[in-house]
Image (cartoon, rainbow, N blue to C red):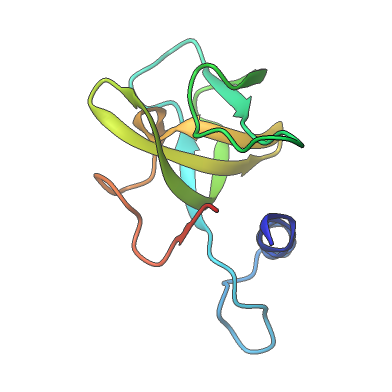
Amino acid sequence: MRKLVKAAAVAAAAAGLVVGGAGVASASWASATVGGYTTGGVSLRDCYHPSVHLPPSQACTYLKTIAPGTPAHVVCQTVGQDIYGDWLWDYVVTSAGEGFMADYYVNTGYAGWIPGIDHCS
């Protein structure tokens, strides 16, 4: 299911389509920008493993650092490690890669859950 949602969001983002329009698969994503409260970039993390599904945290596998100002698509959100009082984590797709990022460091335009965005499972 995660791959299907991710694939639909990536396809819609790549095509520049508004999800929910005529003939477009129903999948959630929201535009965002990487870089809230940091100038050095934000860690992108992989929290999915074959034998265990970890809640997002700084203990998840580090993938790379994404530069501030990088456009991102938030595919889904979930609760994870507390980062400065913010428990929310976003699964993002960027031109530099995809994975989990602490919502504290993502400019989504919302102070919390993004309306209409799926909860990561």
